[in-house]
Amino acid sequence: DTEVTQTPKHLVMGMTNKKSLKCEQHMGHRAMYWYKQKAKKPPELMFVYSYEKLSINESVPSRFSPECPNSSLLNLHLHALQPEDSALYLCASSQGDRSNYEQYFGPGTRLTVT
Amino acid sequence: AQSVTQPDIHITVSEGASLELRCNYSYGATPYLFWYVQSPGQGLQLLLKYFSGDTLVQGIKGFEAEFKRSQSSFNLRKPSVHWSDAAEYFCAVSGGYNKLIFGAGTRLAVHP
Image (cartoon, rainbow over all chains, first blue to last red):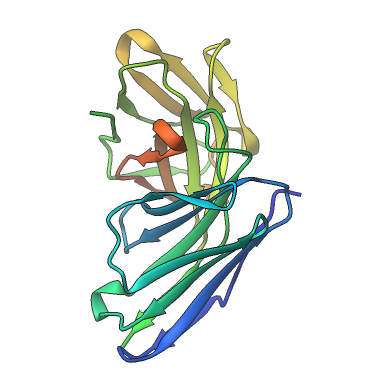
């Protein structure tokens, strides 16, 4: 099973709302990732968790707050977002954080900020 | 600096025709290379990967790719395209901490 699941599939939120995106994998992977993808662009890395510890933050604004409660779950907490944050948010996982481990992606959450 | 270039933004082929999508990379060490496919509104699906060894790698859905170190290329090929292959294709190289560096993508359209 190479499945990464993400909920919700779609999310519409106002600029004053607080919401969370969820990601889950049951492949025993120890690295998990959040990417942001704007229309007609490649995914951009936001965060990397390795063994449940944040290892990379690509200078993401603090209105995005990641959390890794356990090795299977990854959350992205959203607060006071801007309309330009509207995008497809993709979660991925890999066996570890070494470069020769392929990443498996979830279907994404389509976020619209109004 | 590591980078990936996909020279073709958009390609149109007829169903049944052969396909080649180009990818050039810039990376100081031995590259770990990937091709992903993304259908509209979906996540990315791994088609194939190259780590070492045989420079011609086979992937899913009938795709293959050839690693050419001398040309810093990792082109994706398929002998006969199906209408369901219409999608966005991303080439990527893996950097430190498994950071994927993506190319800009090539959008494939398939004419019946």
